[in-house]
Image 1 (cartoon, one colour):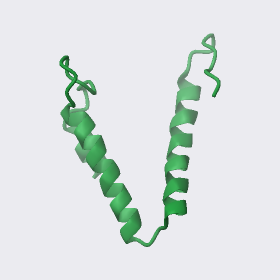
Image 2 (image 1 turned 60 degrees about the horizontal axis):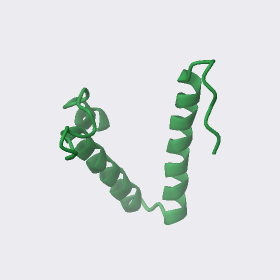
Image 3 (image 1 turned 135 degrees about the horizontal axis):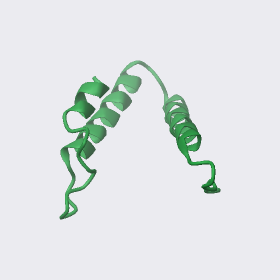
Image 4 (image 1 turned 90 degrees about the vertical axis):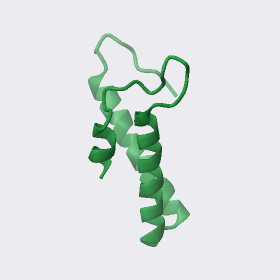
Length: 77
């Protein structure tokens, strides 16, 4: 499902020149809402959904760190 939503316009920028949302950004919002609803309907509570979102962010962070050029310092949080 996620791949289908994102593949429709995978090469689009997140915003058009005039600042409006593109299809890609809308697809991501729909995907996020769908995942959230699915988790709620499956009986996951707030803390578990937050843990899921946190884990997802950890994966993104790890991927960014691994793909950063070695001579570029990492941003500290």
